[in-house]
Length: 309
Image (cartoon, rainbow, N blue to C red):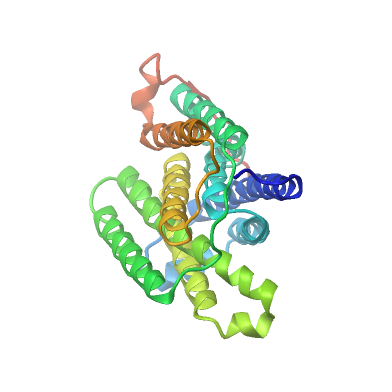
């Protein structure tokens, strides 16, 4: 069943808010990276390095932008379905490319520009053709418990694997770990907002959903800082942008019974568009950000401006 006129308006509002949130998340990642690059290596096992990071002005500005992104995302989730709002956050990587170019002197290669164009095209198809059907705002606690345990285990495995190998590998796998946790946090944000709408702030503070949502978000935040500190902005943001919506779609489908509305061919085209967008983000994530691409025509880089003071 397709949404009514008022329902459709709310869906569009949620989509616009999700895009605004994506911009703030991209701005936050870029500013936080700018602060992290002034410090060198940041480690999860070194509280002192994390504390020193918190004293960086650019990093603090990025954190303020991140809180703004969270606010827009929360309102979007309150008005829209998880499986529709979260995929739009893939545009974070599209916004991050020009921001990284101007703020942290990241090189932009043709492959990354092509990937960004594919992301925009795929999400345009998804939002224009896809239409959210009814779903639930919460799920039984035992189902949530299974989801939390499984996704936490996946996140830990990604952290372990990311601690071995190259800097690019660390940026990608730590970013993926953060993306998994961000997806879990966003999924738990929806029932938290529902409790706030139906009851009051006290009920929210007494709910386990709020603390699980906050805990997953805080851990994801810390892990992402280590990923950003590698200097691989596009790789870090792209893996977060891919894993975050994938986790949300799985939870929205399996736990909250969210689906796209009929007819079936609309759903097929919409999901193909989403797949195209995720493919574009993956292309950006896998793109080499170094001199190797500068030596080939396919990877010709756009020179970055001089670093800002």
